[in-house]
Length: 226
Image (cartoon, rainbow, N blue to C red; front, side):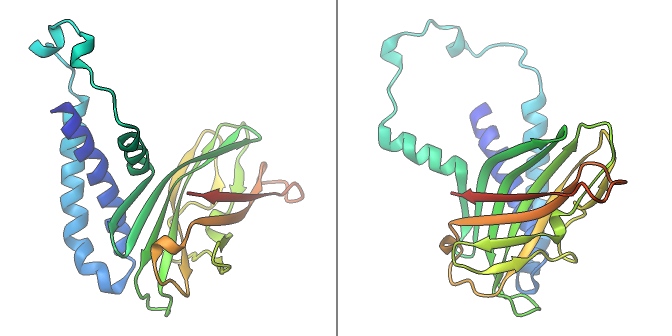
């Protein structure tokens, strides 16, 4: 039961994130209207169940473990399991990649833990978007400035894309000492035949370790692949 609720929580959380992305696109807003609330409810139920303390062990857990009860996992099954943890295909138009990139500069930690690729015609004429999820944790003693939502992205298909400030979440600007911010930055992609065509990205944005000193600008220039 715990394993089932764990998977339910993970997939409902991913579904909620995809629903938020769908809200951006005109053709998928109807899907988002039911996807967001339904997956949010399932995620809340899952988190509530998983957070309850275990008061007693299942009778099967009290039985001694013997080697006869343990079956080795087939190598192909292990590979499939690893792949499921890193990439989730919602449908033919949406792919979500789970990542584990992080870097610490001047006691501020920057993370990118998720990249979503959606094929859907946007009002601007773009054929889809790449959504990059940032987490910025300012553990320094100074207020910083950083602008991922004004950065640039390059795909392996050789398309250079500026971030959309209007469609991105509020992840840029001043971040006070001790604060933590996270959100999605959206990059509208002009040509996208298949979300699986995007196999890697290069992302660039600026960072000031002290917002009051404009001459000490640093830049991030990272490569991510899956």
